[in-house]
Image (cartoon, rainbow, N blue to C red; front, side):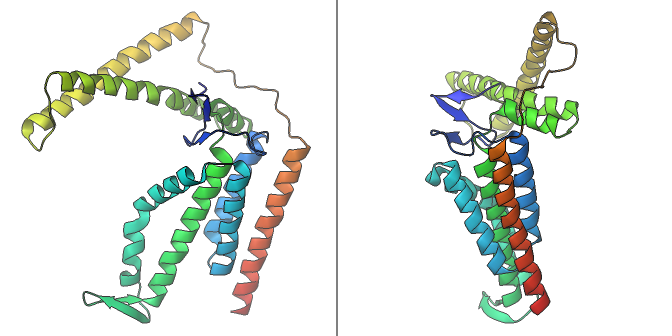
Length: 264
């Protein structure tokens, strides 16, 4: 289930890593736990000082992971598209001190602060997750989840999804090519909607047929309903050092936040 495209290793977040980073050798469990703890901490912060420090930490991890900066930032901006509407409406929906007005609707300072806080939290958490998980091989990711105690059916579901979503996408592309070869041009018409309905139906039928063939092939190879995910992975010295540094950084953020709340 490994994904290699043009000599580049594609991780679980589909960001190609062209150079081996110092983070690549870390144990998967450590990377997942650090990502989860960092994200939860960032979400719990509410003041700009600790949030900006957390963002700086996420950028440092991104540089340490040697991610392609432009491509990574484009993906973060793409994520912003999902929350931009909520952020844009907050200044006008949160009551408070008027800051400016747009088309007669006043925007509050409290709403603006809330919108900036949410944007900082979201971008920081996503950037750290991409830096720590993007170079993760999907199989290694599944193994790490299993060793962390996640139920095996869920791990199997993740691994099969990683592998076969790409297969279904190729099947979809073949059907679209066949439609274009028959002169189909999409438009806002009943014919287009019906054609796409047939396309989805055919995609489901072919996916079902393919899944049955794959199951038969796996049974021929001795598959008994369980994938073997065991691997000889041990937490090493570098894992301990990385976890300790990240723990100290997260602890500093929490302490800073508590001091601000106590003094305000």
